[in-house]
Length: 509
Image (cartoon, rainbow, N blue to C red):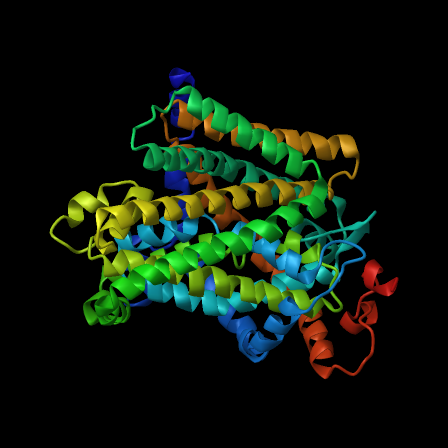
């Protein structure tokens, strides 16, 4: 088995360099990199942050003016006749957004770019909220009804906005499914390795990666996932409704306890983050590009604003108006980055591991051990350290598992743009489970296929390059819908509001 894994790793050795090239282009070209200040900004950063700024102004900063309204929509008790409730859709999208990247992504960004990277995560998230709003509104405008569910998202609004060409919807569906399949092995690996780590904490004994325990744990994960995934969107959302609040609250409370135990480090945290983002030598030197790129890149990979990968859940909601789900999508970015990622940043920065005497040794660790080492540095005694490490590991496992469920579910929705036949949809579900199982087998084999996992980075940037032009193509529709929502004059939302004739669901009400 090890020979097979190593062969796969070699085959995909080109993925990491290709991903880095696309993320960094054209800062990896000397004449561009030599331009003062501008030479620090890659096309990806310019597109993501620039688009977020543009749509923030065009929507009148909906992420600020309608923040309170979003909270109101979330807390409103509503039963969905078709699809799922807006709150359930928010929690389903959060299942994808709040993933392992909220811990290891933040840790890696700080390790590579220093605490200043966290500041640029905040900036990219604030403007990314506007991008998430636009995507979700488009997903709602062009959603379709399939029996008792709604289906939609990037492949659906992409097809409608690009001349209603069948091949466009199919191509975007295939792109998303490939993206999800490239990310699923990592999530399967993370779930099972988390279960193993928790067992080691409880028993106090190391468990070999090829022990029967891991085979049993992997089998249980696949079996439970199959039962949930084959139940359709409603069953998946039923589980994410339960898991997301639990894992979010558990993580928030645990980190807040660590912060309270180390309140004297709070001034150091803020001075390191703000100072690291605006040091003159960083701003006018090459370090600024690293800090900025790490902040935006890891922020995007965490909250997924601009990718279109969360739009499937937005379309699944039984909303009263398309803009309702847009507002909740913006709140999802806020929860993911401004809340969860910031809490992870507190732990890493306040622990001083990143700049202490053993910084080099710390930086050589894998991302999760980096984080747990930081947790240990903030924990006053060994007994409490075991409890907190167990809870953090549990949260990490839940983050990975909800991501796994979300990717399988969203792949199913994307597949509906290709064919709605039950046999085809079930085939996609089975393939997704097999791909996740591959990650579990990697864990059992004691291997980490870094080159294969680099596909998630590559998938992120490729989907951005495809999705953003489509969002601009549909901007007129989303902005007209926004004007209609703000008027609140009691008139129903129909195709005529956005100047089209193909919003079949809304015209049927």
